[in-house]
Each structure stands twice: as C-alpha cells, then as structure tokens.
Length: 129
Image 1 (tube, rainbow, N blue to C red):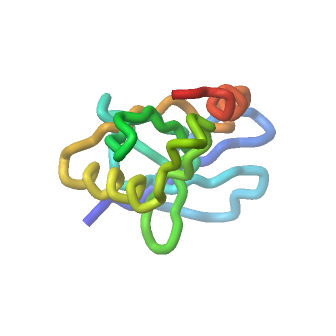
Image 2 (cartoon, rainbow, N blue to C red):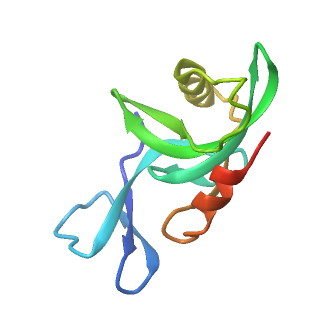
C-alpha cells in the first residue's frame, strides 16, 4: 500500500511545505497529493509536478514532458510539450509508463512544478522533440 501524504504551496509566502497526511483548512494553499512514486533520481512525484521522460512509439523514441494528474482512477501524465504533431502520442502509452514505474522501470525525472517555476509551463509548451 502506498504512503498517503500531501504538500502545499502557500500562495501568500510563495513557498512549498510538507503537510504529511493531515488535511485541515488550507485557505490560501494549493494542495498536492503524493503519487506513491519517486523519479529516477529518488525525488517524490506529486500531483501537478512536471516530469520529463522518453517513450518508444511506432515513430521511434520521443521525449515527453507533461504534468502529473489524477485521471479516471489512475495517475497519468498530461502531455504539454508540442513535439511533432505528425507523430501523435496516445494516452494509453502514457498510462503504461506510469504503470511501468510502479514495477521499477521508472523513466521519469521531476523537472519542477507550476508554483515554484511558473515560467516552466511556457518552456515545456515550446519544446520540440
């Protein structure tokens, strides 16, 4: 069973705080849940973290960057970078990568989050493969 814990972004003080497994009234905070996974460097992965990884597709190897989200009862990566539109990704491939990470084949690297590095979203969207 995975560890249940959270972290919170304080909008007023502009800093991230660990809040463990207790959820109370956190007005002025953005709450992010721990996925139970760590990236390839041992860093914990939370909801709304940005991750980068490579996947093998029928078009070859692609670098993908996206936001970790909870979608249809599973942790997924919502792809944000606009690599080659002629080489589309399929959501099930991204979900499969998350499942592989649970079994020790973890290609993810946390590259930041929208709260601590607001400019990162624009950087990701403009990235190409």
